Structures are given as structure tokens and as C-alpha cells.
Length: 191
Image (tube, rainbow, N blue to C red; front, side, top):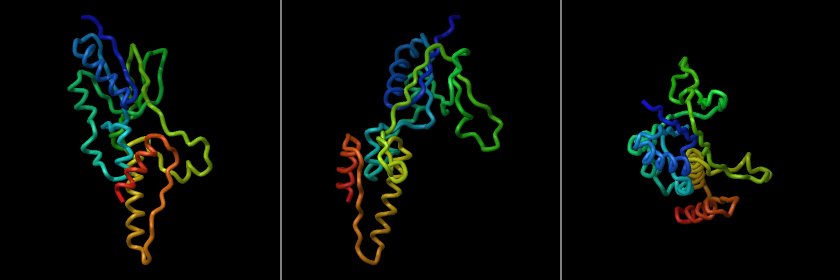
């Protein structure tokens, strides 16, 4: 029996997920290759929706894609794990201990063999070394960050609402890209 070509994709963002889907539908479905998608989260949220999660106007559970279900439907394998390193000599990707392992677990790092490796880890916001940004700002690069922002916003709103004298919330948004503009509009609509 012919050995299948092993394609490993690190990162289940928009690019990695789309690539795994297309390769799964073509090469995976026809048994021409074994496709594996690796991500550190169980679900995917389309990044352009993060401002709506941050503002509290979108239920993330209604918009998320479960990687395991998606993989089963589109003929690829999903592995939950955090990328640590690449062993180029052995052609293996090294992932940290499974994230859902018990703290006292003796499980070791996961090693995945590959013939072709695609790194699709995406990007993060650039603060351009603006003083104070790293220490005091929220970034919207992940669902977790959007949910933390939303919780902090809710806490500030409740604090202002329960204050003896009326208070307004002042929110500054750094960045006039799509996310910054959409977040401003969403916060305005949510008021």
C-alpha cells in the first residue's frame, strides 16, 4: 500500500482553516494525502468578528466553528496542541503536552511527522512601540482577548451605573484600521 503524503498545517485561523478545508476536500477525500490541522483552540472564530464579541453584541458560541466537527466533515484530521518547535532533521513538528491534560499528567510532548509543513499562525496587532499601549490597552487578536475586553467593559459600565454621581465611560481606540473603526461603531450602537 502506498504511503500517503503527510501535510501538517500549523494554525487554524482563516488561512489555515481554509487551506485544510480545500486540501481535505481534494487530496484528503481522494486518499492522495493525509492532512492535519493543528491549533491551540478547540474552535475557530473569524477574526473580523472579534470587535462584535468585544462590544458584547455577538454571541461567540453562535459563530464558532468546532475544529473536530469541521475536520470530520472535510476529510482532514484536527490535533489540539500548542506549537513548540520543528525538528527539521526528523521532519517532525513538536507540540506541547495536550492542553486538556491533567496538571499531574505524565503525558509528553506530541510529535507529528510531516512531508509538507505549512505555518499559518497569522499576525498580531502592532503597537508601534507607543508608550503605555502594552501595559494599558486591550488587543483584539483572539477570542480570549475580545472576551476579556467585553468583561472589563461590562464591569466599567456597572461601576459607572452604580456610582453615586452619574459617570460616563471614555474609551480610546488606538488604530483606525478595520477593527478599530468597526469597534467604535459597535460600541456606539451598544450604548
